[in-house]
Image 1 (tube, rainbow, N blue to C red):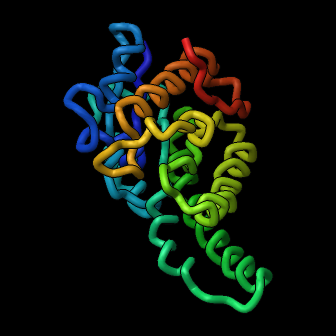
Image 2 (image 1 turned 135 degrees about the vertical axis):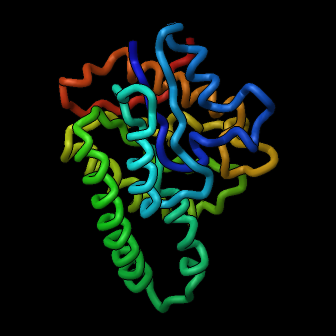
Length: 216
């Protein structure tokens, strides 16, 4: 039996944005063995600072988790979009601003990850996707420094990664009612990647593998 706990934000908590029964948790449950269990602690709108409260709620689950799968940080970056409109005098000045934002994100992400790792339960991390329809090319590029943080931390701690940039790479992967959220199609692709990770990744092996989406 495997107990998978989904943690983070609306990437996993996408029920409000998709037709009934097609939310990610339900799609993942349908891909697993009947005795496997999927619990949802992720909450729409949560940021890195909210993860401590999510970790505390693990104690209330009826069964201990075998995997903590985490997609968080996108809302932290979303909060910087206004600041990214700041006018600067040079490219170097712009990259200096990004260096500061990246450093703050790294600090907050590491703090979040340390709380997760203190549970001594296998952890899988997810990157921030960047194929949102109509996303400005500059904003797409602006996500790279933050994804770099996530990937570096995953490698440093030898954790597997769901690379959502590779998984949700089609306009249909994003919800019509809110294009920054996964659609039923996108949620299904993420669910398939999680199922593959749980099936193939030895929790005790401690090595980094990046998972994308493989068509069946």
